[in-house]
Image 1: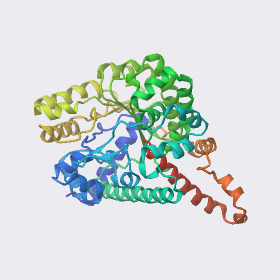
Image 2: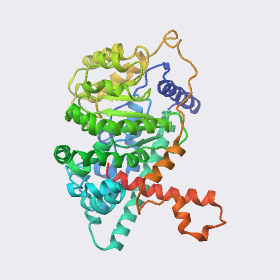
Image 3: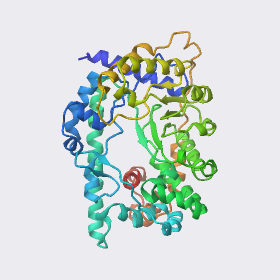
Length: 462
């Protein structure tokens, strides 16, 4: 067990590594991430997966064991866990627990083509009135009292789960000296429509039958997704994850019309809010490299597939590159093969900095040789992914991203035209009894709970 002073030094070193990375400087060494997902972390300690999902506090011992046994600069598994409690309370169709405890996402359709006009007019209203009752059976009732109480219970469960996991994460970060990176998650507008609303097959038909409505729906959803991806914490390390799903399955002209414009607006808005954006590029994005280059500097691009040499050459001088290492090799390969692959990637990606060592996907289970191979690879990168003083000679004092959150979120809130979301100015007009009261205190409280409900509602759609 490390001493408190050693943990403090280690945490400061890791914080500085990410600060250098996100600002375009060459860090002292390459940051390393352990890819084990929540399910694999629980399996490593032979715990019951369903019990761990239902009571995440029980997983502390499992997390602690993984943190001791595998190197990482950030807490593993922190964005791979979906608590089943609020999904159960709502009667979820979109996320359900299998008999073995795994949380599954069936192909569902919460929106029908006839909903487009209402969605375009007010996406938040359409989600609450039409889409959620199709995705969550306990909300599919004409009894407004039951619906309200169900939603209240589910939101309380959601907040309780977030608080429990947040507390556990903070404890583990302190105990193991991990970097603290405040995080959020959102979706590209087209993926938002496709994932839980129209489904893969539905959206693919829509862009041919009603293309203008699809484009308009993506534009209408963008403000909601910018707000969902915002992070209130004041930190140069805050980071929003955007997993990108549908683009590799689209024709280029469809990508240019439906996918790219609103994704670009989303990323640029988050960057203007001082947020470091991590795009998880699922499947093959090689034909879209020129588009990715257009994004604001130092976006974090985690690739699942592709040619690392071409990506480094095309994007590595502007953006931070991650991914590429195949999880399948850890399961199936020898230790020598796995270390050779890590060396190959370091040789390609490390020069010049702007590289975060990560894998092509998370590890959901521990079959095959992954335990010993992963331990060896993480240790290899930690020991060998170091930069010399000459390689860091070009570092300079670079400011963090300018944070225009207040301005952008105020504009976003005004764009959410909905009877279910009330901005402070409208709330104040309706409640004359607040005249002369301490507005600075009251408005913050009212907006906090308005935003909490908003975040919960949109999270049910991701």
